[in-house]
Image (tube, rainbow, N blue to C red):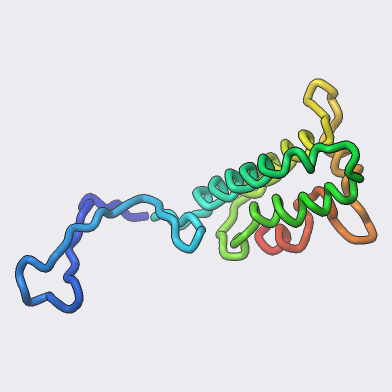
Length: 156
């Protein structure tokens, strides 16, 4: 690990290295967004995971009227969730250098969303394992829930 104490560096615009006054100061940052993915100086996936979880929550909030509607069959809500929310949470995850904490954070966020979709609160004391079993479809794989799908196996 290295430490950078200089926060600015100079670069020369369009080959103007020999001319004076053509240089600009750029700020060195700890994290930045590149092509929709959050990158950090230390190279871990913590920033990217936090950003993708936030994006997943935003996508879920857009679809709350549909995903929490009891008139919509559970299998359809699961497919909608998988198509929109989970895919936005896991977008770009193939390139993350994940750790156990990152996978746990993604699973925790998914369980909170699924509990909201099912109308199950923590006061109901329904274990997450039972909720996962209820949402798992053995014929088609993980339909509505479960970070055991191919994408999580790739990053986990």
